[in-house]
Image 1 (tube, rainbow over the protein chains, first blue to last red):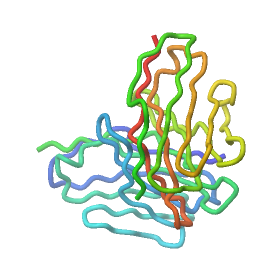
Image 2: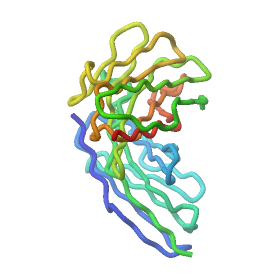
Image 3: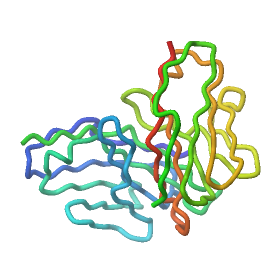
Length: 115
Length: 116
């Protein structure tokens, strides 16, 4: 089955700096890669996702890049703010395949943005 | 996205007992999923709740321990049976966004379970 590795496990940045979180996946059939943000005590929230037919997607200060050949994808947050502090999870799935909506999650990254 | 609610939001239970968690969605959805999130850990899929058929369980999870019901397209329950302290976790249901072919999933608020 799919295995997703996420790095780093913790990331500390100063407000205004950029943050990058990287994930690698093992199943070349995976074609959908979402990122979730989970604040303390709250549910995971989908913040951005990318399909395998594109290499990059941006939404304001966040962007995701995908390298299918290398089987890795990354989350980029620019101009970080204290409210970006949370745990971020990457995930992968084979949309449309027999796994249906099965998401395999990375281990999570604790992002701390210092004012 | 769909509005998802779970009951109870939290519970403290004695070992050996069972707890049933409910997940309600405000619209009909085809796919519903149950995840477990142990303290400080990532999310692990327990099973996919299929309407009108048996749930599909992931490796390491069995129906006797985590029976699931899916009586209609807006509701599902997960039961944690014969609980032990190792079952202390957050249990989350999620639904797949209707009309999407790419499995956008949205999560319920979770049920925080503590087993003594």
